Amino acid sequence: MFIMTPIRSLLFCALSGLVLLGVSPNVRAATNSEPINQEAVQLSPQTQNGVSYLTGGIGLDESQALLQTRGYNLHIVSSVGPKGEYLPDVDITIQKAGGESVLSLTQVGPIVYVKLPDGKYEVISRRNGHENRQNVVLSGNAGQTVNVNWRVE
Image (cartoon, rainbow, N blue to C red):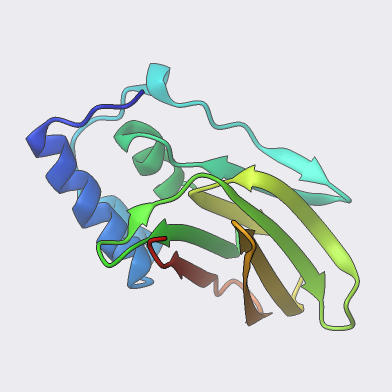
């Protein structure tokens, strides 16, 4: 179980808020100069159907490490409630514009980074019987951020 000190809690909230606002990863990385405890970071690139992705963001160190990662053009952030607290248990499917599934992940998050070819995609997030669909267009080096905020149940 991850327990936050008041200072870490404030930093975590600041990072969460920046992510939810879709602030550039370069700006986010500059918001906290505190060193990352690499022993607390459990990130490892994975591949499904030829699509590379990273998922994580549990705890401040892992969130910071993930936010500083480069090379992924689609960023998906899952949160809950009005404060935008990170949410680590979302099912995510990414489909090409024609409906062909390119990536299907179960119980991931709160942050998912994906490396996809240019094109139009639909990001489908599911949690507790609810579904959220968002369309994205990926082009060139410009990254897109999909923020999914679930209501408190």
